[in-house]
Length: 86
Image: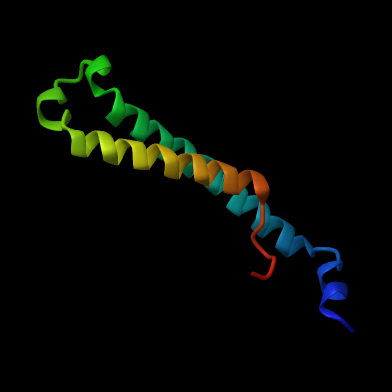
């Protein structure tokens, strides 16, 4: 049996549940990370009183990284590439 034959096996219900749970978790965490990134990038527009402490270039850079990571998590949840070999 070649390795390609194992990849074509249907998924068990346990594996399907695992993939569904990971996908939902990736969507949720992606939305949270993206929201935090948007908040940090546009903190002046939210009028929270935190602008004086968190409105510097380092926080803008961190907000951009958070936004990119959130978008990556959403993409990973969309692709559902969890049980495949690397």
